[in-house]
Image (cartoon, rainbow, N blue to C red; front, side, top):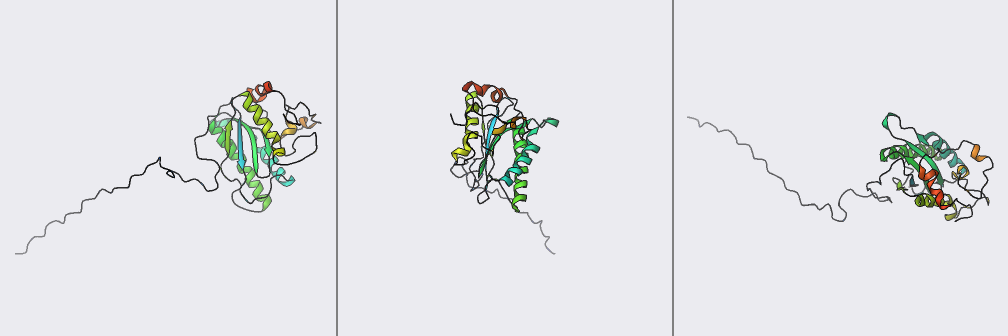
Length: 231
């Protein structure tokens, strides 16, 4: 009589083990981009009361931003993205100051919270990047990395940021007509000069929004008005 075959036993699954990984060890975690100058850290808390000073760097090998043609791109992008009204719960965003240098950009903005800041900056920088790529007849990234943002919490911080922003061209060796502000900035619309007559520019609708925070409108003036001649 043929022997009845028994039911084949299935192999028992084995538990796999993985080597221990210390997330605190040097080099652990998300790799940093080789051209990044900004670590992926949690951003400072932003409120509608605190202006923000973002800085964004141009990718290596691209032309200077301080040309008439590039400025026309910035003008259009600023006019289109200078203010988000905060509809549908998006939060408010305003571009209130800017300074364009050869390979980087300084801004002072206001936002109701971190999400509004991120959305406003993303929209603004995307507009600029598309316009510059079209101008240069190229594709690819324009900005080196994500922007660095410093939250301005005191009148002194806002004063220092404004003075730094509007003197940044001189710091990088740029020259323009004596007695006049940097033409590649929002300085012609800035109302805090003690030694500059606006010659009608202030009446022209510029590419920046009207600031609403107390720190930007009033608080910084505790430390004096700005001078084209320096501190």
